[in-house]
Amino acid sequence: MQKIIELFPQIGTALGQTFVMMFFTLTIAALFGIPLGTYLYLIRPGSIMEKPKIYLVLDIIVNIVRSFPFLILLVAIIPLTRLIVGSSIGTAAVIVPLSICAIPDFARLTEQTLLEIPHGVVEMAEAAGANTLQIIWKVLYKEARSGLVNNATMISVSFFSYSTVAGLVGGGGIGDFAIKYGYYRYRPSIMLFTVILIIIIVQIIQTAGRIISHKIDKRN
Image 1: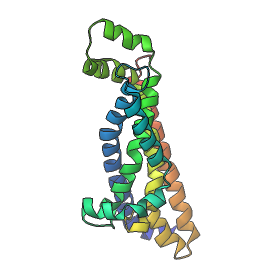
Image 2: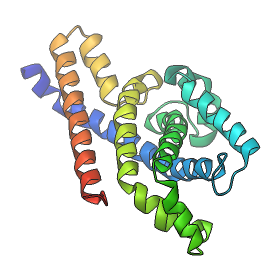
Image 3: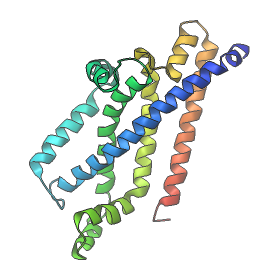
Image 4: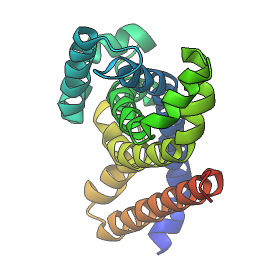
């Protein structure tokens, strides 16, 4: 326990790096993933703006990116990462591959969430003279808001675990702390403490997401 207390400053730094990675990754994923998922929903066959060929191309691209193992992607796009942030190492560098992975995941989850909305609701809005933008904001997002929060929660949990490999590119974070101070120094107690800390954080994220989703669910 004494060893863990001595490392509290490093733990705080590692957590800070992880939360920075998560904040920017989720923000970018939401800003790009939700519109992309909405567009996929709108242009899929049978929808209000159906464009089967464009949908097929985007659908394939989303599936390909989602199927890429994160570790391989992390290494494969190092030139792109260096171009965007000016470096291939560090916390900022990790945000690039994390975001590239998160955007298609968020997009797919958004599309599936919107598909759960009864089609009759959209048809009623169209019959009332609503344009596409009004349907998106006043119908789709209003009906799907609880599901979108659940999506954000799922992405948060998944990419929190992805961020633990940030140490491979010198990105820091809680995973890097566990390897550097636990594994490399043969201190199982520190490894165990880190695992427990990660579990607690994941539970907090899931609980917060569930509470927010319940509060904004229009069915409640």
